Amino acid sequence: MIEVKHAIKSFDGNTVLKDVSTTFETGKTNLIIGQSGSGKTVLMKSVVGIHKIDSGEIIYDGRDITQMKRNDLNMLRREIGMLFQGSALFDSMSVLENVKFPLDMFSDMSEEEKIERAKFCLERVELSHALKLAPSEISGGMQKRAAIARAIVLNPKYLFCDEPNSGLDPKTSLLIDQLIQDITHEFNITTIVNTHDMNSVMEIGENIAFICKGEKAWQGTKDEIFDTGCEPLEDFIFASNLFKQVKRAHHIFKEEMKKN
Amino acid sequence: MIITDAIEKTGSYAMLMYRVITKPDRWKIFFKQYREELKKQGIDSLAIDAIISIFIGAVITIQMIKNMENPLLPNNLIGLATREILLLEFSSAILCLILAGKVGSNIASEIGTMRITEQIDALDIMGVNSANYLILPKIVAFVTITPFLVLSSMFVGIIGGYCVAIFTDMITLTAFEAGIQYAFNPYFITYSIIKSIIFAFIISSVASFYGYTVKGGALEVGKASTDAVVNSSVLILLFDIMLTKLLL
Image (cartoon, rainbow over all chains, first blue to last red; front, side, top):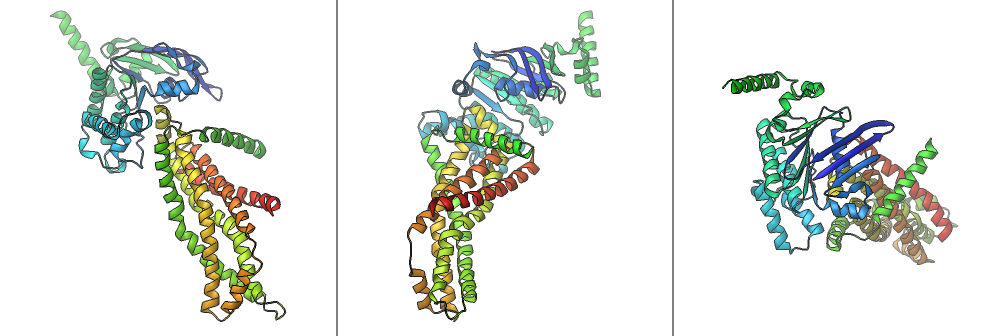
């Protein structure tokens, strides 16, 4: 579990995170949602330790990273896997080498064991046919899957995904979402997904934090999201006609259920 | 503004080098990268090094011949002057200025692209010291290989001079050879190698700094690459004067 307590972060006098407190639960896909510029990426980067918060606490299962020295933080980071928006695979390496890289750096396994483990992770994301290809030779969706395989190769306790669906078609997005959720449950990971894709919210949102203008405006599950009473959240979620209709259908369904 | 900016940049550079110059996480990976960098920066620079050196060696010889037509000046001065120019200045300082363009821009754009595509963030998140992992092999490899590039430039440059003596009738081979061998001071080679090691450190570390600290997109990577070449060239010239005063 990761707890964020009263996190404040400013850039050049502009406060981006204003006293944010939230909890990301273990074994669940925790979503951070919000409009562009709301501060969700800053929140995620602060939680992962790329940005140092001005005040507050970020606690990973009892360990406050704001008080950690660089070496201790580096040790903790070995328990973290991260999927970047642009995949961030290393161009100079093949898909297999990319996935094997964290093992090369941090494990004492033999070369055969490392290759076996990397292949297992690539099989898990259904990418065992692309072992020798370079990242530039595979599609965006495959790059995301390879990045997921790299993120889980060291059996992380925490998995961060920064806009995993950006630039992907709806079908591939769904596959990536499903994969993230399956891996979260399978390995009992604390997963945090930063997204503004409403399909992802409805698909995998087990614990959702809505960030608006640097503050946490709402927190709940995907089932609670239809009746939040939170105006900025309603504006954000039901901006499109499709989701307005989904909301209407949800209410009709609920009333029908009550009548019956 | 310019002064505060320069001080700020120097401070950031020093802090980056503090992170770079530490023990690598894995020596095996370090040596693998080191070998790759030796090839990329050294072996792949041999051709340009040889082409430039042979032509400059020949041009220096022709210019010396044209400027020493006075019958009172002995012919062997031509070989001597060619040798001294190559050994003292061209093969160390001028060659390093050329390498700043080739290797420096390559390093800055490679690391800069890794920065803007979040590959460096990915390393940091994994708990890897990204500065040490990416930059140290480049610096060590370039510092190792540059003296050899300088030595090969000296050798090939003198061959360029020989070509003038062999293929033209501007100077006899005997006179050129006598000049090349006259009053040879081996310390000049040591001096050139010392200079080249320092210049190699400047080129690789300054280019790495500009690449590592890029913010933005492709446009900024291009700008960082140019800044890396310009600033390392200026530093090479500055250190050239200081080292010449100190070492000669």
